[in-house]
Length: 115
Image (cartoon, rainbow, N blue to C red; front, side, top):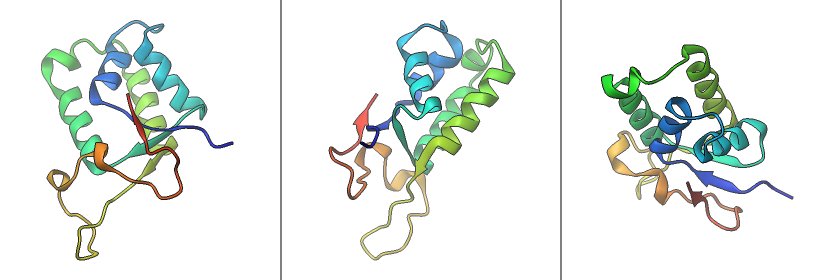
């Protein structure tokens, strides 16, 4: 049976990196890391997450650069990247074109859940 396909909110990643290791956000990230769930990743998610994590108020709360690197690698490698196409069949060029919440992965039933 296939693991559920999810879309993460940037806040989940932030809380996993800045909060308690036993928080719900950390548990969701661990589920991605172990393959318990599959992660849908898009350019908009990666750009937004990077932007938010660079904000001084967030960056100063990240306790471990090693943990942040580990999470980034796992999200990138364990995630299923999707670069959506516009109606003309060309790959979308900007993250403003589509948000991850509108992704559709053929054959995934149900469509991605958002956390």
